[in-house]
Image 1 (tube, rainbow, N blue to C red):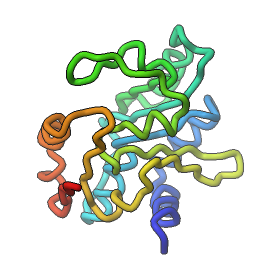
Image 2: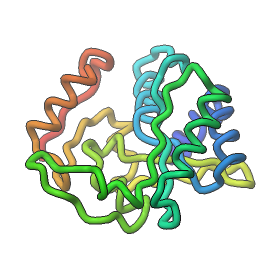
Image 3: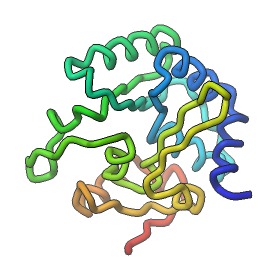
Length: 188
């Protein structure tokens, strides 16, 4: 089975994740679950570990040039908190990240042109993945680097935005290698 089919199968077989995807589709059809919730689910399954949805942070991303004031971010956050109060919700409109995000050296970044563009600068390739549930119940995946690193348990640095020391510090802070011992840091 290819990795795309496998990812979809893992998502479909996770009732807690499906509930969140269905609700997100109901309140914002163009919003995606992303980052750790997808990565950690897959890595936990590949390590034969349970992955619980209580008390975890869940990242939600969308791209809307008409929401510069952040009203949709606030509304989505409130709705998600009300429906799933045991999760910490991090909802970000990627169209306006450039207004507040600074690089390691304090420089500003350019405005992202799309969700694909935004994901293409995330720190690890295995984290740069977003999914949403479509109206026909298919799962759409955005993954600028593909999903092979996710399933091959590879921690690969994406050098587009952060330095290698920041990448290593993130591995340490998130305790990736402690939580999932089969992960391999890949240096290309």
